Length: 225
Image 1 (cartoon, helix red, strand yellow):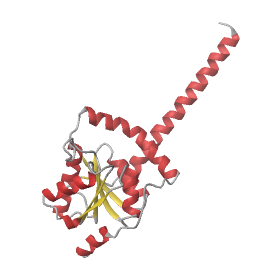
Image 2: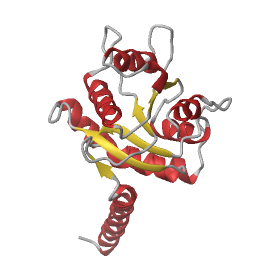
Image 3: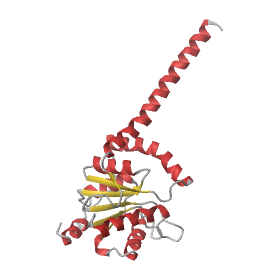
Image 4: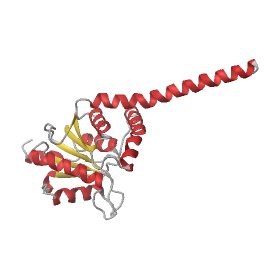
């Protein structure tokens, strides 16, 4: 092998090693940071301390318009917290792209059907992703104290998001249905989602906003909060 060829290969290996190192930092750094911020703030429905509001993140609807399996798990956890007195109000946050597809409406209907009073449920129709849901809970609905509800594979990121936008946030992660292909894809997708969260925070991304809502504060006031 000639000397120029060896030098070219050496430069290629150096560049490749540098790119791999940068990629690892970009992936492992956000993943680690999210878990450090969320550490000590993750609970079960039985152990979660009181927070004023339970924030249920959207997770899609079934073909018949009812909450998906993942979303039912989150809603069941919210109901359990409400019945235990661990939250006073439930804020359901999801997408509402058309009259025929409304995550917040489906979530509210489900909760009411399981015994949660409608006056203690508030709908956010612009919760298009976790960052938007947390940001709007704080800046549109005035939430200060929150238990965020999602699946366990992403609850650390959800708690970190809510805490970074200014709320006293804890999280409850549902395990249903663990071990499926959808679950494994969700775990894998978290790699990119953690990086996106860092970008959203660094750029102070503004989600869809709008007029201030008093519905959460009004509901809390009925509970003497």
